Length: 148
Image (cartoon, rainbow, N blue to C red; front, side, top):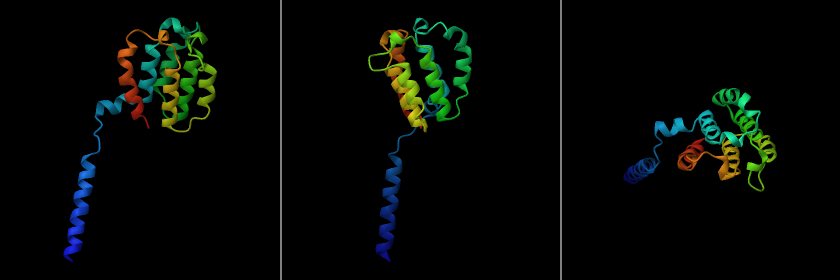
């Protein structure tokens, strides 16, 4: 009987210790991981000159659609749409709008969509972005990592 009580106490202590070591995610971090917000932040960080002429008439509709993303598939479609508005010369070697569009067709989860968005951002040349993106990028990537 004593042995059982000791084992239960040891188990309880180990469980509490393990729970105490889980990272706490702040409300700010959770809200930063909003798919629509992440998409909008990236689109707004891209130089206006990096977009094709069609972007100027489509930007408002695209941003509205991005804010309404409700699942991984709609996020992937929104990413591939954005990729289609980028001038081809602003993709790094080995990356293209076509690659993003093809990969978007395979997305099933938010983790997949987050990976697609990360690939899209990483596949653009530095000159495609506004100067202040380099200071915002790490926070954006951290929020993207929280998206599941």
